Length: 70
Ligand SMILES: [Zn+2]
Image (cartoon, rainbow, N blue to C red; front, side, top):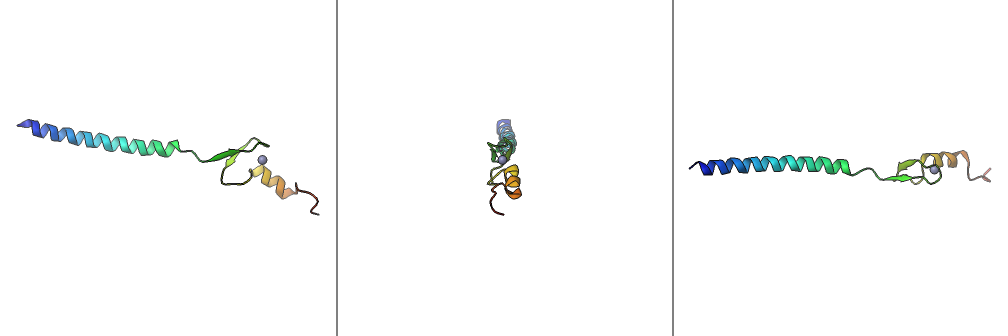
């Protein structure tokens, strides 16, 4: 007679465990996906992959690294 109630409680525990696992999985998945980073071969610094050049390269370019454009 009590077997039915016991199994119902077990199902509830399993559901709770599943929800906890899913939450941990989502948290872990979010933490496991790092930002896309590229390393500049010239300066050796890591920068956001969305940028076309590293901050130092952009600085050099702004200063006038191209030359001849006087
Ligand atoms: Zn650079």
